Length: 360
Image (cartoon, rainbow, N blue to C red; front, side, top):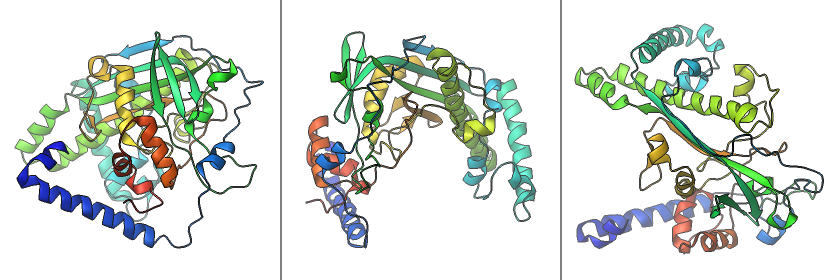
């Protein structure tokens, strides 16, 4: 962004693009119709989720601190693949495995699935891809809508956002910080974070396919790397629950139950509905030292490299759940900017799709 403003050649285009972004936001807000009104941030916080901290004892992890996973066996991940999004990426609608017998797209789906399984066999046998990951489990406490993470005496602050929906009094306005015990309550709680990739080594093979003008197999490989990364995240979360954190040692779930998230705890990720702001990935990657420990990095716009990658947090509270933060008042965006130490305009750009008002 700084380069765009400094350069005479780029400034006009940058300003025009910026004006266009805000024009789009204003148009969206003009067209939002009779959407439910928001409550004040004070009222939303007063209606926060009650974690039952008077009677609940947070589970301590069996393996606290950082754990790295180098060259994770890809063969272990194949049975954990969620194939439904794979077909969606090829614009074939339907749930796996039923899609293979679909009257409309079944023939295409079966052919694609055969090709995918054949390529998977080669990926594993010939070691086309390397999977690496890192996760950490640390003492943590909540302060308002932030979570303070203690890493060997050094504190890292994670910033979350709160729903501001006008709800009945018995329904909370959620914030992810609500699932961590408050700092003034005397309870020792914990939070986890992870980053995994199945994309190391992919560039050589993509270049080979593209040199042969084989777009189909290039796209197929990218799609399979994405599925393996998601499977790695799913498998690792399972091992964290049952083994490394160990708060659900008796869990026995098949792949369908894993896909349906029929387990205790959640793994939300920056950029997704419960924490829609991508810049928080920077703090997550610092916590994990993801570059050194997993060969992963962030672009200036917080996209992950390699692109076949997944990262996020671990929450263990038995009532932790996914939710949509949704629309945000200017009051909350100002508060968020203060907590992150950035100008309001920067926070508004990060949260453009969530704003319930027209930026100045």
